[in-house]
Length: 134
Image (cartoon, rainbow, N blue to C red):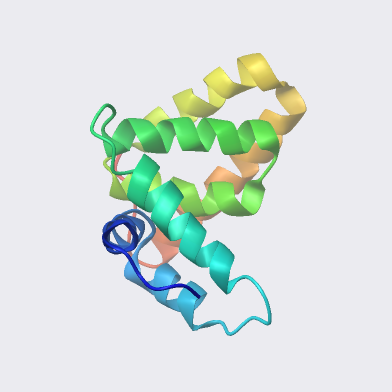
């Protein structure tokens, strides 16, 4: 992995703020054969460049991310970002509206799958003592 930059450090702070220390620590502790360079790229570019921009608040970025992941059928990442959306101040009702809006454009099947993933993530959060507020 190349040397760390200021953008990497900013990205890591944002990544931890949105996804939580436990997830990020687990992701970084996995010693995969390949992918370390990709993790650095994601931290620097996605988290350090895109998520730290001032034009949109993190709450809005979370709702956009939830809708996009629903449209793409990326349920594992969707569940992760539902937790991030809650950390960024989104309510379950706002997450539901983002999914409803995505459904109007990406179809019922993708949206039904997204709702299942979102509900699973919210239930896991509640079971862990971190319920989302309405």
